[in-house]
Amino acid sequence: MSLRRLSNASRSLSANSLKDRLNMLTTAPIVPKVATALQANIDFVPARIPRKRRLQTLAVALWSIAIPICATLFLYLCSFPPLWPLILVYHVWVNYIDNGPENGTRSSQWFRSLKMWTYFADYYPASYGFHRTFIFAWLTALLSIAFSRREADLPPDRPYVFGYHPHGIIGMGALATFATEATGFSTAFPGIRPHLLTLASNFHIPLYRDMLLAMGICSVSKRSCSTILRAGPGSAITIVVGGATESLSAHPGTADLTLRRRLGFIKLAIRHGADLVPVFSFGENDIYEQMPNEPGTTIYKLQQKFKSVFGFTLPLFHGRGLLNYNLGLMPYRRQIVPVIGRPIPVIRSENPTLEEVMSVQKLYIEELERIWNTYKDVFAKQRTRELTLIA
Image (cartoon, rainbow, N blue to C red):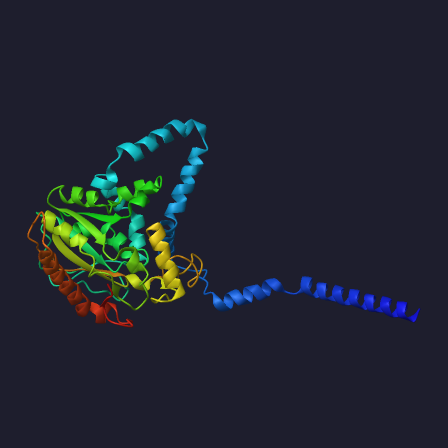
């Protein structure tokens, strides 16, 4: 009898203890704790921000999610049966008729000049400068860009191949400089028709492809490069030379370039008699933080395996968010200055020899290094090491 009473008492005690614990859990201020943790680790955007800065952030945010927006909009349009005939025509046009990604004829000066792109460029701010051939434009106290007079120009009587370095995570500086009029490219270089090149897979995304074409962006295929350069004097292409491989080396404060083994764009320039123009973009690697992925680490091996299977890489990076400053996939608001160097004339040859290619590459690297050495103390003050050619 005493054992039964003791058992009942222990059960009652256990039940009461469990009930008390449940009450503590349900009444504990979980939300305030979470809020406190978020406030301690996330730097939220203040409530009052100038309207212009909000528009700049919105422009960058819209571009960052342009692919899912366009894909979602297209799927939404597909849900309306009356639109199916038009969608079928669009499908036929995109896959069997339109050669826009290969010839660059879909570029729209109106679209490139939209106010949205000005906000996009001012977010960093992003603009271009000139080396040697041009007098460099210095920053004002408000970090806006002011251009002074030019000593010379890129004559529009020949084609050009711009080599853009470094790739960065996405290449925001290349977009602002060569795919929009936000930095005044056409005003500075009248008669030059720039075409930024990207992966052909981007032109398989409905609606998004049409936006790229309106910006003058084309495929990076050999056929596209040759077609554009043969279009006549003033035709220009911009190749982000380092490609996907270089994006894995995009860490703040560094300038590690994949360049020595990249001879294709030099051969292309020689075959078409196009002047080579090196472009070094200070700050391109600073707008995102990337996880440590030095060669030999597990992350590096996984990224290389991913690239070998899918043809592109997947940097593990983070930036800021729309409502905070340190968590998200938007780039940080850090200055980008692509410096356009002196053009390197080449002698046209249908079948350039290795010696000819290496000779031009030597001049190209020298000009790129000269740009770096001239402006590193102005635009790369926070660098952790010097310009390095890693491959």
